[in-house]
Length: 588
Image: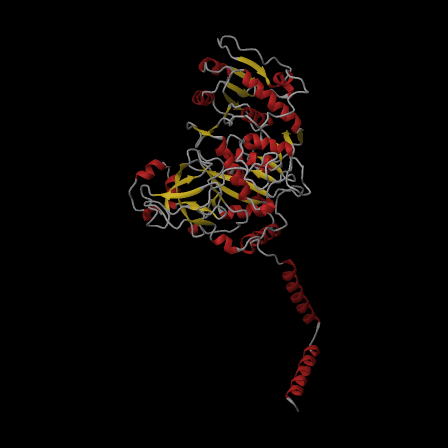
């Protein structure tokens, strides 16, 4: 018999023997095995981004200066090329191949009104502007009406002879209208953090030299300001609908003040409704004045006054555009909710980016004070949310407690976290977030030198699984418009504490970072540790210290050094830490 015949005979005997022993249990085992393999093949997903792109996230320069680390930049802003400084605004009639202007705040509102300019199904689409009232009501403001308000408020402020307008309001449409009015009518806007002690408000007015205040009744200490700050010339009350019938123009007796007082509604009713529909023309306008923002590191400390130019803010907005992949950038289908104070430059820059992207924006005066994200989003269903680390930690804690009561829920949550951290893709089903919510992106920030709670990679992974949204974690500093650095959109990795349980990602396309020797930190000897300095068009003065000691990890992402963490937890000031001369290895 030939070899082939022998082989076929043995194969036939094997098959006969196999099926001869087939029984009920064999059927179950084969069914389970085939089902498992089929499920793995059918549900297999590719990572959202190639792992190698996360292994070296920023680009370091080939040459470094003495006592400094290499310069780190975003992969999208390579060395030898200028950092992103503007919006590339194309004026009407300009060639589509010509380089556009960097732009300023006025161009952001013009774009919000004009709508999407690129060819496509969304061409001409505009976003909505909403005010959230209570827990279940949102009022829409028409863009045409807001344009009229910008014109009327700007003309009124200019007619009062003021040059510096202090805005002491919670997150609101009136706050943004006043900001744009100052931009269009060449006035310096001073954004004061809301709900501050009386002495702090007076101090900020003095230091900013404000002569006009736009504020809400009941929150602004008018009597004390009139007595202690004689430079104030004009006051505009923004009264809510329920109290507009009261006489807010009266000046309290005994103050001896010559301040003129009016209300927001009176200013808007002074001019015919048919006027003010068109914004001032582009030609012949001066560059807009600066925007002053106060940075408070810790409660009770005096706020640091920072004066941003229009170019600083626009560069910060530009950096945020390139931080999000093209397919996921903000657009008319998004609803953006700033659940952090607009007095923070990071939140303000993101809100301006949303307006320029023609996304809908919702303003809620209570959202920044909410300690839980589910409370912050009541009344609206945002797709993009700016939240504080404290609110995220509170949400994480409550969601974890809820999981503890259900073994099945814990198992599902673990599988989703595993898909994120090991599979590298965002699971389609979320653990805790309301089913009707379409939240897709959360942006939060660490405030350098402040008491901001840190968000570890494990906490961020849990929150991604809870909410079904990607999370970008940024590092912010007083003199930087927007963020110093920010985690990648697709970075879901988790690290142990020895590897650094968190990081702040890479520089944006509008910043570059260098670490300089200071005190016990030596950038050269330990591969890149030192005081964090940031440069770029979004930085006041071009370069500034973040006020913290940092290091670049093996994946070229930025984090604090363990020595800085230790000193911060022990209550040692950064200035004292820089004065020390111990070896870095003692603490780090």
